[in-house]
Structure formats: C-alpha cells, structure tokens
Image 1 (tube, rainbow, N blue to C red):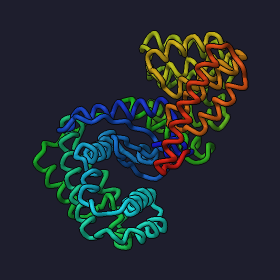
Image 2 (cartoon, rainbow, N blue to C red):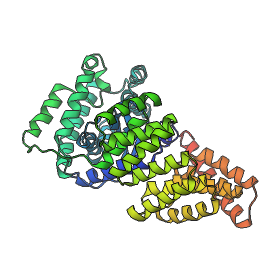
Image 3 (spheres, rainbow, N blue to C red):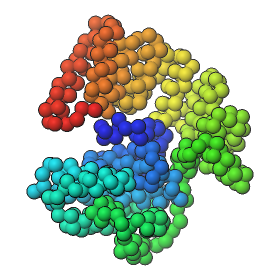
Length: 431
C-alpha cells in the first residue's frame, strides 16, 4: 500500500472512495465470514480489473467501474475479491509454500501483480526466478481459490440484496473479450482464470437461486458517470454525452457526465446549462459538489460556498462534502475559516491524510509555514511515506515557529527517523 499510495495511479477522489467503501462495506457485512476490516480504493487505470491485497485492501480500476453495465456486476467483482480475503487465500498460499525462500515468494508476488496489470514480459521474467515453486500445484491451488471465491461471492451478493447473476454476466463478457488470448497466456499467472468450467459452475449455482432484477442506485450511476467523463479526450467525451442527452434528456447519469466533461473541456456555458437540468432531476451530495466546482470555475466563490453549506445542512456532513467545503474556502482565500472547519473535521476523521493536507494549505495561506510543513508531514506519515515526511519536518524546523510547535516537530522527527532506520534494517525500501 505504501507503493500504491505513492503511485500516480492511486486516485484520491473522495466521492469515488466513499461510494466504493459504502458498497464494499455492505458486501463485507453480507459475507458469510464478516470478521475482516476492508479498505477499498480506486486506481486511475482504464483496464478492467480489481485486486485484493493482504490486510483487506481492495483496489478497483476506474475501467471496471466504467465497464460495469449495472451495479450488481460491479458488486459481483467486489464480492469475489472480498471472498479472497475472508477465506484467507493469500495466507493459505504462503502456508502451502512453507519451503519456499523469501526470494521465491517475492517473485510470486511480482508475477501476480504484473499479470493483473497485463504486463506479460514482466510476468515471464518474474516467474523465471521462481523455479523453486511447483507451478502446476500452485495453479491448481489458485483455481480452487477462484471457485471458492465465486461460491462465497454469489452467496454474498444474495445476502446483500444484489442480483447474483451480475457476477455471471460480467465474467461471461470478460471471457468473450479475452478468449483469443486465453490459450497463449501463461497458465500459472492467470490469477483469475476465466475458464469455461468456472463459468459453467457459476451458472449451475445460479440455477439454484431465484432470478431477480435489482435497480441500480443513483450513487452508482453518478460514480460511473464521473469516471466516464474523465476518460479519453475532453472534446470527445462532450460529443459522446451530448448525443446521449439528446436521445435521453431525462437521464441523470448522462446529464452529470455531460456537465463534468464540459467543465473539463472548458465549455463553461454548456456546463452551466446542463447543470441546471441536472439539478432539477437530482439533489444529491455529488450533484451539489459538481455545482460548486462549476461555480468555482466561474470565480463565483460566494455562490459555491452557499451551495455547499446548503448541501451540508440538507445531507449532513459527509466526507466528500466536508472536503469540498474546505477546498472552496481555500479557493475563496478565507484561510482562517478554512483552518477552523478543517480542525473540526479532523475531530471526526482523525489523522485523515486529505484533511491534514487541507490543514497544511490553510496554514500556508495564513503565513504559518512551520505549522504548514508539520501538517504536510503528518499527512505523509499517515500514508507511511516516511522519507518525504522527514523532509517536510526539516523544512518545518527551518521555518521557525513557537516553542510548542518546534517541540512537536522535534518529537515527530525523532519518531520518523527511528522508523525509517528500522525499515532499512529490515531490508525494506524507504519510499
């Protein structure tokens, strides 16, 4: 996760993060073994993919969100990944391979991640270093994991009131898209092998479950629209969603996507006009945040703040609205007020990296450079980015400040230097 957070593909989007974690929490609670903690995050990547990591971290590519034709399909993929964690598949792989060296296990990890990123040459190079592994045995074990994850995932979908057929339809479509590459791909690296036998097993299980249609939530539609509005060139996105809105003028998802893509393309007139139609049909926190972005783009900071305050009063203090509110205050150059509200938000979302970064921006806006660097260091520390955090603390020390602030800086600096030294002694890379 330290590597992922420092990667440019790690998507820091409060609205997508909240949607994925709300959906994931609903599924995790419906899992037959709901004893794990999960954290879901978005990866800005157009490929159709998702992956589970040790500790309950589940990454979701934006390409998967855009490709899902309905919410049950997306939920089916997440339920499958949750099952990998709840059934301790990663731990079981390591347990089976007790005799393997650390180097071999590291090569296996690289091979799996490279395969999920569709980097065939990297995968082949990694697997060449894993000669101590029994490839066929590992493949069989992985396929067994996939069957178990499918079974648990289907049960989870039903328990969470989603349509279990969503998993089958999505996997069938993915299989159709990759059927020509299936025979040439290294079998050992197929961490999610889409075989005909596996699809048939899912269909057989579905035959025992009553069929039902589950309507998509508005949150899913808006999250997908937000992702699709960022794909490709902005003018192309505008043309695409203009056409959809022309055919379906009441489609909230298309109206949101057209507003967002028009804003991205710099067509403020179109964004304002489409937003007015959108707000007549949907009054959600995501629409309010989009409205504030359109107003800020037009330098209408007072109107943007008023819109966000009204949304906070109507919908409550959701995390995305709180973040948008603080950001709008900073755009309005109201640093003191921004610092006050961010401090209040940090009481709710303690040590949240995004709010700590907002606090840093507020401090810098007020000329409190030492406090700004300290808050930035705390944000990096929460993400385990130790070396950059130490650099920020060094800058904070040079910036001066009162005795109390300097004491905090010195204590943080000693703590992080000790942690960084321990990491180096363990042979871990300091990012």
